[in-house]
Length: 284
Image 1 (cartoon, helix red, strand yellow):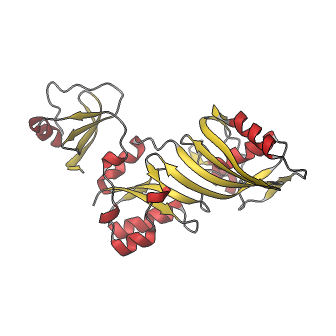
Image 2 (cartoon, one colour):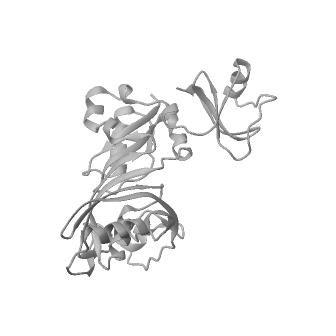
Image 3 (cartoon, rainbow, N blue to C red):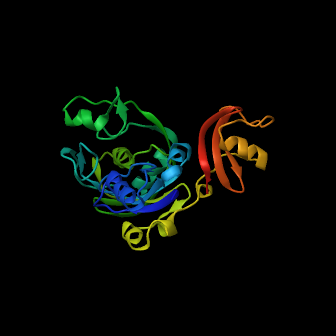
Protein backbone atom coordinates (compact mmCIF):
# COMPACT_ATOMS: atom_id res chain seq x y z
CA UNK A 1 0.00 0.00 0.00
CA UNK A 2 2.21 2.78 -1.33
CA UNK A 3 1.42 6.07 -3.02
CA UNK A 4 0.16 9.60 -2.50
CA UNK A 5 -3.00 11.03 -1.02
CA UNK A 6 -4.57 14.34 -1.91
CA UNK A 7 -5.85 14.79 1.63
CA UNK A 8 -8.34 17.44 2.74
CA UNK A 9 -7.07 18.57 6.15
CA UNK A 10 -9.84 19.76 8.48
CA UNK A 11 -9.24 22.91 10.56
CA UNK A 12 -9.64 21.05 13.85
CA UNK A 13 -6.57 18.84 13.28
CA UNK A 14 -2.92 19.78 12.87
CA UNK A 15 -1.05 18.47 9.83
CA UNK A 16 0.79 16.01 12.07
CA UNK A 17 -2.44 14.72 13.60
CA UNK A 18 -4.02 14.27 10.16
CA UNK A 19 -1.02 12.23 9.04
CA UNK A 20 -1.24 10.17 12.23
CA UNK A 21 -4.76 9.11 11.18
CA UNK A 22 -3.37 8.05 7.77
CA UNK A 23 -0.68 5.98 9.52
CA UNK A 24 -3.30 4.26 11.65
CA UNK A 25 -5.54 3.47 8.69
CA UNK A 26 -2.76 2.27 6.40
CA UNK A 27 -0.50 0.59 8.92
CA UNK A 28 2.40 2.18 7.02
CA UNK A 29 4.78 5.07 7.43
CA UNK A 30 3.41 8.37 6.14
CA UNK A 31 4.43 12.01 5.91
CA UNK A 32 3.12 15.28 4.50
CA UNK A 33 4.48 17.73 1.96
CA UNK A 34 4.11 21.22 3.41
CA UNK A 35 2.64 22.01 6.82
CA UNK A 36 -0.68 23.80 7.05
CA UNK A 37 -1.27 26.10 10.03
CA UNK A 38 -3.27 24.32 12.79
CA UNK A 39 -6.46 26.33 12.15
CA UNK A 40 -6.14 26.19 8.36
CA UNK A 41 -7.87 23.69 6.10
CA UNK A 42 -7.35 22.38 2.59
CA UNK A 43 -5.01 20.36 0.44
CA UNK A 44 -2.34 18.40 2.32
CA UNK A 45 -0.17 16.14 0.12
CA UNK A 46 0.58 12.91 1.97
CA UNK A 47 2.97 10.11 0.98
CA UNK A 48 2.40 6.57 2.23
CA UNK A 49 4.86 3.67 2.47
CA UNK A 50 7.56 3.54 -0.21
CA UNK A 51 6.37 6.86 -1.65
CA UNK A 52 7.65 8.68 1.45
CA UNK A 53 11.21 9.31 0.15
CA UNK A 54 9.72 11.16 -2.83
CA UNK A 55 8.16 13.89 -0.68
CA UNK A 56 11.27 16.01 -0.53
CA UNK A 57 11.99 15.45 -4.23
CA UNK A 58 8.65 16.75 -5.48
CA UNK A 59 8.07 20.44 -6.15
CA UNK A 60 4.65 21.23 -4.70
CA UNK A 61 4.67 24.74 -6.19
CA UNK A 62 2.67 26.66 -6.95
CA UNK A 63 0.43 26.57 -3.92
CA UNK A 64 -2.86 28.44 -4.00
CA UNK A 65 -4.68 29.82 -0.98
CA UNK A 66 -7.92 31.59 -0.18
CA UNK A 67 -7.60 33.83 2.87
CA UNK A 68 -9.57 36.32 4.92
CA UNK A 69 -7.59 39.14 6.51
CA UNK A 70 -8.90 41.44 9.26
CA UNK A 71 -7.49 44.93 9.43
CA UNK A 72 -7.14 46.86 12.67
CA UNK A 73 -5.04 44.53 14.84
CA UNK A 74 -1.74 42.69 14.43
CA UNK A 75 -0.93 39.66 16.58
CA UNK A 76 2.34 38.02 17.57
CA UNK A 77 1.44 34.94 15.52
CA UNK A 78 -0.06 36.94 12.60
CA UNK A 79 -3.30 34.99 12.97
CA UNK A 80 -6.35 34.94 15.24
CA UNK A 81 -4.69 32.61 17.78
CA UNK A 82 -2.14 35.20 18.84
CA UNK A 83 -1.97 38.13 21.23
CA UNK A 84 -2.62 41.62 19.87
CA UNK A 85 0.62 43.59 19.62
CA UNK A 86 -0.45 46.57 17.48
CA UNK A 87 -3.63 48.30 16.35
CA UNK A 88 -4.80 50.63 13.61
CA UNK A 89 -8.04 52.55 13.14
CA UNK A 90 -10.42 53.43 10.31
CA UNK A 91 -10.76 54.69 7.66
CA UNK A 92 -10.09 51.31 6.04
CA UNK A 93 -8.40 51.19 2.64
CA UNK A 94 -10.60 51.03 -0.44
CA UNK A 95 -10.47 48.35 -3.13
CA UNK A 96 -8.15 50.43 -5.33
CA UNK A 97 -5.63 50.87 -2.50
CA UNK A 98 -5.69 47.15 -1.72
CA UNK A 99 -5.23 46.16 -5.36
CA UNK A 100 -2.34 48.59 -5.67
CA UNK A 101 -0.70 47.00 -2.61
CA UNK A 102 -1.29 43.53 -4.07
CA UNK A 103 0.45 44.50 -7.32
CA UNK A 104 3.42 45.79 -5.33
CA UNK A 105 3.80 42.42 -3.59
CA UNK A 106 3.39 40.31 -6.73
CA UNK A 107 6.44 38.67 -8.29
CA UNK A 108 9.80 37.44 -6.97
CA UNK A 109 10.86 39.09 -3.75
CA UNK A 110 11.77 38.48 -0.12
CA UNK A 111 9.62 37.87 2.93
CA UNK A 112 10.32 37.86 6.65
CA UNK A 113 8.72 34.66 8.02
CA UNK A 114 6.51 34.82 11.12
CA UNK A 115 8.42 34.44 14.38
CA UNK A 116 5.92 31.72 15.32
CA UNK A 117 6.80 29.33 12.50
CA UNK A 118 8.64 26.08 11.86
CA UNK A 119 11.64 27.85 10.32
CA UNK A 120 14.88 26.55 11.84
CA UNK A 121 17.04 29.05 13.72
CA UNK A 122 20.31 27.86 15.16
CA UNK A 123 19.21 24.23 14.98
CA UNK A 124 15.87 24.84 16.70
CA UNK A 125 12.40 25.74 15.43
CA UNK A 126 11.55 29.43 15.69
CA UNK A 127 8.23 28.78 17.45
CA UNK A 128 10.01 26.84 20.21
CA UNK A 129 12.29 29.82 20.85
CA UNK A 130 9.25 32.10 21.01
CA UNK A 131 7.65 29.78 23.60
CA UNK A 132 10.83 30.11 25.68
CA UNK A 133 10.43 33.89 25.35
CA UNK A 134 13.67 34.24 23.43
CA UNK A 135 14.18 37.06 20.95
CA UNK A 136 13.48 35.77 17.43
CA UNK A 137 14.57 37.79 14.39
CA UNK A 138 14.33 35.68 11.26
CA UNK A 139 16.20 36.78 8.14
CA UNK A 140 14.28 37.53 4.93
CA UNK A 141 13.94 34.61 2.52
CA UNK A 142 13.23 34.56 -1.22
CA UNK A 143 9.63 33.95 -2.25
CA UNK A 144 7.66 34.18 -5.46
CA UNK A 145 4.13 35.57 -5.30
CA UNK A 146 2.91 34.46 -8.71
CA UNK A 147 -0.55 35.90 -8.25
CA UNK A 148 -2.34 37.96 -5.62
CA UNK A 149 -5.97 38.98 -6.17
CA UNK A 150 -8.32 40.88 -3.88
CA UNK A 151 -11.66 39.09 -4.21
CA UNK A 152 -13.73 40.97 -1.61
CA UNK A 153 -13.43 43.96 0.69
CA UNK A 154 -15.95 45.16 3.28
CA UNK A 155 -14.91 47.34 6.18
CA UNK A 156 -11.93 45.81 7.97
CA UNK A 157 -12.33 42.39 6.27
CA UNK A 158 -10.43 41.60 3.09
CA UNK A 159 -10.56 38.35 1.12
CA UNK A 160 -7.81 37.35 -1.26
CA UNK A 161 -6.50 34.52 -3.41
CA UNK A 162 -2.72 33.99 -3.52
CA UNK A 163 -0.67 31.71 -5.75
CA UNK A 164 2.78 31.38 -4.25
CA UNK A 165 5.99 29.37 -4.22
CA UNK A 166 6.70 26.81 -1.51
CA UNK A 167 7.97 28.43 1.66
CA UNK A 168 5.76 31.51 1.36
CA UNK A 169 3.74 32.35 4.47
CA UNK A 170 0.28 33.73 3.72
CA UNK A 171 0.16 35.11 7.27
CA UNK A 172 3.21 37.21 6.43
CA UNK A 173 1.70 38.15 3.07
CA UNK A 174 -1.40 39.45 4.88
CA UNK A 175 0.84 41.46 7.23
CA UNK A 176 2.73 42.99 4.31
CA UNK A 177 -0.41 43.71 2.29
CA UNK A 178 -1.93 45.62 5.20
CA UNK A 179 1.36 47.36 5.89
CA UNK A 180 1.36 48.79 2.38
CA UNK A 181 -1.87 50.60 3.28
CA UNK A 182 -0.64 51.75 6.69
CA UNK A 183 -2.64 49.25 8.71
CA UNK A 184 -2.09 46.44 11.17
CA UNK A 185 -3.79 43.12 10.33
CA UNK A 186 -3.96 39.42 11.03
CA UNK A 187 -5.25 36.32 9.25
CA UNK A 188 -8.65 35.01 10.37
CA UNK A 189 -9.23 32.17 7.86
CA UNK A 190 -7.04 30.18 5.47
CA UNK A 191 -7.78 27.40 2.98
CA UNK A 192 -5.17 25.84 0.69
CA UNK A 193 -6.99 25.11 -2.55
CA UNK A 194 -4.07 23.65 -4.54
CA UNK A 195 -0.56 22.25 -4.07
CA UNK A 196 1.27 21.28 -7.25
CA UNK A 197 -1.00 18.88 -9.17
CA UNK A 198 -3.40 18.41 -6.24
CA UNK A 199 -6.67 20.38 -6.24
CA UNK A 200 -9.18 20.74 -3.43
CA UNK A 201 -12.01 19.55 -5.69
CA UNK A 202 -10.44 16.06 -5.86
CA UNK A 203 -9.23 15.91 -2.24
CA UNK A 204 -10.28 13.00 -0.02
CA UNK A 205 -11.47 13.48 3.56
CA UNK A 206 -10.38 11.42 6.55
CA UNK A 207 -13.99 10.24 6.87
CA UNK A 208 -13.87 8.89 3.30
CA UNK A 209 -10.63 7.06 4.07
CA UNK A 210 -12.26 5.53 7.14
CA UNK A 211 -15.27 4.39 5.09
CA UNK A 212 -13.58 3.28 1.84
CA UNK A 213 -10.17 2.15 3.01
CA UNK A 214 -6.89 3.56 1.76
CA UNK A 215 -6.41 1.68 -1.50
CA UNK A 216 -9.11 3.37 -3.66
CA UNK A 217 -7.68 6.82 -2.94
CA UNK A 218 -3.94 6.20 -3.37
CA UNK A 219 -2.37 8.01 -6.33
CA UNK A 220 0.63 6.85 -8.36
CA UNK A 221 4.03 8.51 -8.17
CA UNK A 222 3.48 9.55 -11.79
CA UNK A 223 0.76 11.91 -10.57
CA UNK A 224 3.29 14.11 -8.76
CA UNK A 225 6.65 13.56 -10.47
CA UNK A 226 7.61 16.36 -12.88
CA UNK A 227 11.35 15.63 -13.07
CA UNK A 228 13.22 13.76 -15.80
CA UNK A 229 12.79 10.02 -16.35
CA UNK A 230 15.01 7.35 -17.87
CA UNK A 231 13.31 4.20 -19.19
CA UNK A 232 15.27 1.01 -18.51
CA UNK A 233 15.53 -2.18 -20.48
CA UNK A 234 14.63 -5.42 -18.73
CA UNK A 235 18.30 -6.22 -18.20
CA UNK A 236 19.00 -2.74 -16.79
CA UNK A 237 15.95 -2.96 -14.54
CA UNK A 238 17.21 -6.24 -13.07
CA UNK A 239 20.55 -4.65 -12.21
CA UNK A 240 19.00 -1.49 -10.72
CA UNK A 241 16.65 -3.57 -8.54
CA UNK A 242 19.71 -5.04 -6.83
CA UNK A 243 21.47 -1.69 -6.49
CA UNK A 244 23.89 -2.15 -9.39
CA UNK A 245 24.42 0.51 -12.04
CA UNK A 246 24.00 -0.65 -15.67
CA UNK A 247 26.95 -0.05 -18.00
CA UNK A 248 26.11 2.56 -20.58
CA UNK A 249 23.33 4.26 -18.59
CA UNK A 250 24.10 7.98 -18.33
CA UNK A 251 22.12 10.72 -16.57
CA UNK A 252 22.84 14.38 -15.86
CA UNK A 253 24.74 15.26 -12.68
CA UNK A 254 22.75 16.95 -9.95
CA UNK A 255 19.37 16.38 -11.57
CA UNK A 256 17.23 13.83 -9.68
CA UNK A 257 16.07 11.36 -12.32
CA UNK A 258 13.45 8.62 -12.08
CA UNK A 259 14.69 5.26 -13.40
CA UNK A 260 11.62 3.42 -14.60
CA UNK A 261 10.28 0.37 -16.38
CA UNK A 262 6.67 0.26 -17.57
CA UNK A 263 5.79 3.26 -15.37
CA UNK A 264 7.15 1.55 -12.26
CA UNK A 265 9.68 3.62 -10.36
CA UNK A 266 12.71 1.43 -9.65
CA UNK A 267 15.12 4.06 -8.35
CA UNK A 268 16.00 7.72 -8.08
CA UNK A 269 19.47 8.76 -9.16
CA UNK A 270 21.28 12.10 -9.00
CA UNK A 271 24.29 11.31 -11.20
CA UNK A 272 25.64 8.49 -13.30
CA UNK A 273 26.41 5.64 -10.92
CA UNK A 274 24.88 7.37 -7.90
CA UNK A 275 21.53 6.24 -6.50
CA UNK A 276 19.47 8.45 -4.23
CA UNK A 277 17.04 5.63 -3.50
CA UNK A 278 16.26 2.16 -4.80
CA UNK A 279 12.65 0.98 -4.46
CA UNK A 280 12.51 -2.78 -3.85
CA UNK A 281 9.90 -4.27 -6.16
CA UNK A 282 9.26 -0.88 -7.75
CA UNK A 283 6.75 1.82 -6.94
CA UNK A 284 3.60 1.87 -9.06
